[in-house]
Amino acid sequence: MLVVSPLHIIEDSGVPVGSADYTTLVIIHGYGWHSGTFIKLLPLAAKYNTRIILVNRRDYPGSEPYSEAERASLPSMSLLTGTGTAADEAVALESLKAFMKERARELHDLLVRLVKNGSVSAVDRMNNTGGIVVAGWSYGTSWMSALLANIKAFPAVDFKLSNYIRRVVFLDPPHHCLGYPVPDDPYNPLFDTSIPVEDRGSAFSTWVSGYYIHGDSPEKLERRTPLRDPPSTLSTLTSEEVQRMLCPLPGAPGGSDMVVMNIGIKVGLYDTLRKEALYLPVGDPSNSGNIWEDVEVRYVSCEHSVWEMPWGTMSLQRELEAAETRGLPMRKIRLMFVKGANHFVQWDKPEHALRALVGDEDVVQ
Image: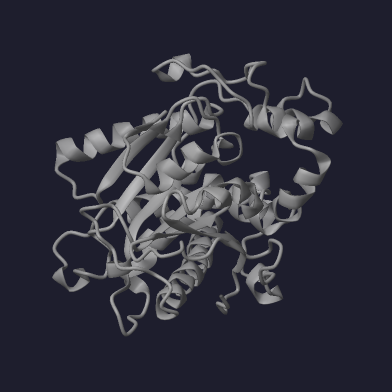
């Protein structure tokens, strides 16, 4: 299938043979690791009556690189040195919001083209079949926030796109992608001065893809030491597998992901996007039907992920409880939990990942 887009479809499992109610699952990858990390889901597509489309974001293999003008629109890295003023940070926030709005529009337009090509079945929300499930993993969940936050601003097409969108999924996001503050005693080996600089990259890979035993409170989150068994996912990959999935340049110093993520955290971009994505507008009937109010938002939390992910889950749970107490209108947000899985669930437990994305279980185990 040919879909013209600055994004790049690296794999398309195709329509399940003989199915009229299949799900179209569109997946957006995270930071540094492109959508090749989801390749193990493809052989499971027919079993779960799903067409799986793996998409690479801009600046990743096969997609359109950002133009000089787009790169010039990004804030200066000098903001990270602490020399910027409050006014500088306000300007940076607005420029990053505009940048992410364009990224959301690109994703929106890809979904529109999929529907226009006649390759999406009708949604049946009661039976959890058909339509599009669009999912972001890890840093890719920022694209889900941007999509939901900006959907009302995108021009109408000759059909109602929300009628074809069944679900938007946040697959195991770290807390900073939702704009939540860090807990006491945060840890990341990239900033651990006890580790030689040349060894921090490999230490980070072991840390971020490890399996952790956490308690049920912030104080009981294991910050540093993964289990020895199972081993950290990235330590089990062959060099060939790494080459097929890793794309370090966008996350390297000065890379597009590195700039947007780090400055975005500093100026409050992700907090802003989360609030605009998850809370519904009050008293504006003109928005009815344009904000995807009937579309489920699913938040998937993996039991053994590094602390940044369960901390994000705890923070969201507290926010949902507070919003309910205050009577604030929010989207239909459903939390799901994957037992026995770490942050790279799509690689170590691909069937668990697919069930969490397209299934109807509150707990996948």
